Structures are given as structure tokens and as C-alpha cells.
Length: 405
Image (tube, rainbow, N blue to C red; front, side, top):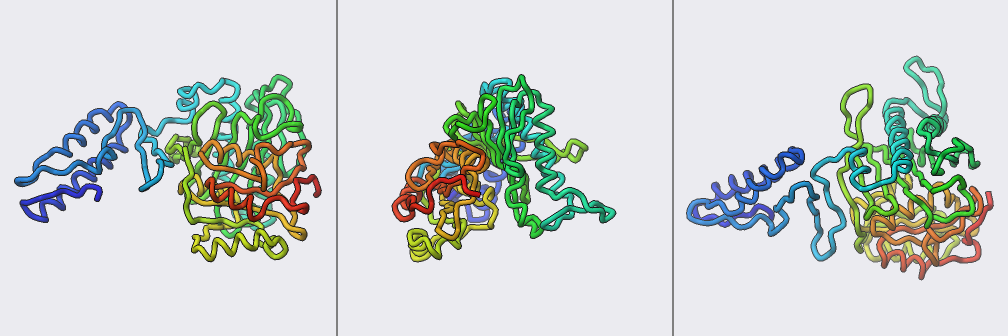
């Protein structure tokens, strides 16, 4: 019913008026904050314009009302707003400053954004197979995940605020700077085995205060993020003390800088909805609870949305505002996700964005990270879906958090 106008003067006039109203609302997003007030006033005025002998109805209640320097809420019927689209397109640096993020943490976060921008360019332009990449002359280069690993270490070394870093490629704590205030654990390119198919892949990272990445939990995270290299490059970010999870878009400026990061959306809640992404599906062969859970999804006509890349498969829950991702274990298909590099950073982001998380009986943020090799099953999604996972799958003996290779 958006833009529908009651018109006595004829259907044609009504159609033209609908187009004008929609067009005016679209224009709002093309103006920066200095022009928003003028456009907002004009659009609000349109809602009372007379067409023929009849007054136009209001534009979708309050949805058409644009507040200066604020976000536009995108709501779904009968549920709380899950996503707010940011109209201003605030630059990353300005957004971090306006949200009062500490200088050292801001610097560390920006180092990860810079690294992911570089990785995005390399992923987009490299000719890769499962093992290696090739340049224009056909010479074999570093495998793309090793290249991504190198880029992140270089950026963290240069930022000056990182004390310790650890990559899933070589799961060791590496001292970066004696004067650093934060430590970063990351999976440089999750899904690298499917990159040759041109599926979306991503980078996962968590930023902890201090100089240690063991003897900690996900509860202590200062920030975490997921970078998705797909048709667009986006970063979903959560920061301790900043409400919600936030999406940034890499806007290409067609220069040697390969673009800049702009804040485009906020995520505050995950509602119930029939969308599922089942990881480690082979575990359903000898994990009876998981088999029953998959049968439940199919019987109740859930939509399957699964690519095999954990980053896009989890991030879609924030973007869609519904759904569930799970990755259980079984006697023959053990848990392989490392808590330090994947499970905890993703859990921190998801809970900030309004989702629930579980390893079968408790939040993934409560899993002790006693070594870099701790592995666990996991589930992320809406409250009822995560409860269903705990009830039907739980934590059997074979699924206990482990450090087994």
C-alpha cells in the first residue's frame, strides 16, 4: 500500500502521483545530511497535496517521515524492526569517532578494515584455483588464503596498537608490539576452498584487550567483525559499548585506494523465520538429534539458504532478520570450528545484533579459550531456533568442546 493515493479525478492521475511520491523518497537517500532537511520537508508536504478533488493519503503512516541525521527504519509486519538503513552514509572514521570508540581500539579496527579492503581487491582480481593464484603472466603466486594472512599481519604490524596476533593458518600467538593495547585473532579467508567456484568468502576476526589470546572467553571481546567478499564487499561489525551490529559497504571510488568504507545499516534483533543453513550436514548420519532437527526443518517447509561459506551463511541472519545457522558434531564428524578464530568472534557479533548463540547448552561466548586449538559445535539464530537446537541436539559426549586436532 506504500504510495497508494485515493483519487477521484482518474486512475492515471493517481499513478503519476504514486510515482512522484516514491521518486521523492528515493531522492532523500541521494542527499547528504546538509540537504536532508529540505528534502524531508518536501516529502512530508507531498503527503497532504490534493490530487483532483481528493486529498492524498499519508505515505505509509510514519514510514515516509525522514528525520534529519537519523536512520530510516525498515520494518517487517508483526515484528520489531530488525534493520535500520543509514541515510547519511557516514564514513568509517567519522562513525567510530561519533560513537566514542577509544583511540587505540579505533586504530586497530581501522587496520582490519584496511586489510580487508586490500584482500577484497586481491580476491576480485586474482585468478585462483584451490591451491594457488596466478598473475597475468601465469606465474604461480601465494595461495589466496596465505596472501590474505600476510596482508592482515602487515596491517596489524603497521597500526602500532596491536600487541599480539594469531591466525588460524598458523594457530600460534605472535608478538606484534610491546606497546600494543589489543590482541587480534582471525581467520584470514574462511571458505577459501570454494573460492575457485566464485562463491562468497570472508574474513573473521576478534579483538581482545591486552596481550593474550588464551585464558579468555568471548565475553571479553572488545570488537569483532565479518567481512564478506561477494557481489559487494561488506563488513559487519560489533563493538563493546556500541548498541547493535553495524554494516559497512566498501564504496569503489575508482582510484588507487580501491574504495572507502561507508556505514549503511544497523542490526538490532533477529525474529523468528523459516530459514536454515545446516553446516556439517554429514553429522546427521550418526547424530540422531541433528537428524531429527533436519527432518523438522524439512517437514515444516523451512527455506534452505546454505552456500558452504560460514561467513555469508551466518551474516544473512543479520541481514534478513531471521533464520538459524548450526554446525553440530557427531562421532565420525567431529567439531572443527575453532572458538578463538571463528565461533567466539561470530558469536559476539550475532549477540550484539540481537541473535542468540549456543554450543548446545550455553552461549558460545562462555566457552573457555584455554588454547588456540579449542574447537566446538555452534548455533546462531533467533531465540526459539537456538532453543530448539539445544533441546534436539544438545551436547552429547562426542560433541564436548575439545582441543583435538
